[in-house]
Amino acid sequence: MEKRWPQFDWSVVDPIYPSKTDLYSFSRQALTRRGVEARKWLRDRPEKVIAVVSHSGFLRVGVSNKGYHNADYRIFKFAEGSDHDETGGQLIELEVTEMKGGGLGKSGFGTYYMTPGDYPEETETPTEETPKLHSSKAA
Image 1 (cartoon, rainbow, N blue to C red):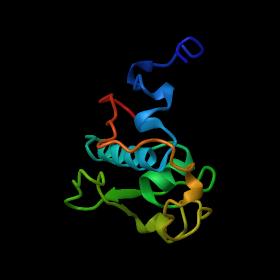
Image 2: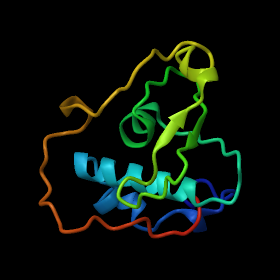
Image 3: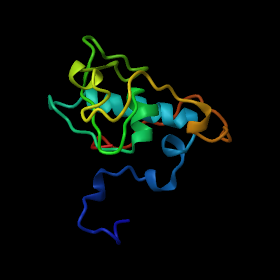
Image 4: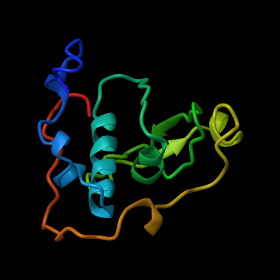
């Protein structure tokens, strides 16, 4: 990737990411853990406002359990005292986007939990602990 797009700072990319193993594998366990690590990273940032751009499927199953239509957005805050290391913190959607089904009103209402169709059948052997993100910088 570095050779193809040298204009980007690749030092923030976890060196394990390109292999799509461990935390980055396509499995229920890894998707869940990656979502927890993403919420922890966001919760621990010093900024008060952060825009997250990602694949809608990952945002839905890994981060917020909310649906996302193309180019739509949602606004969240972390619940008070939301420092739960096991979950990465509880997200609360602000009424301004929740009542409309996303900022553009295209994303639907309600909670969207992970279903078996969101990941392949488990083929990996569960480990005691899935590795955490290797970089302290952007995920």
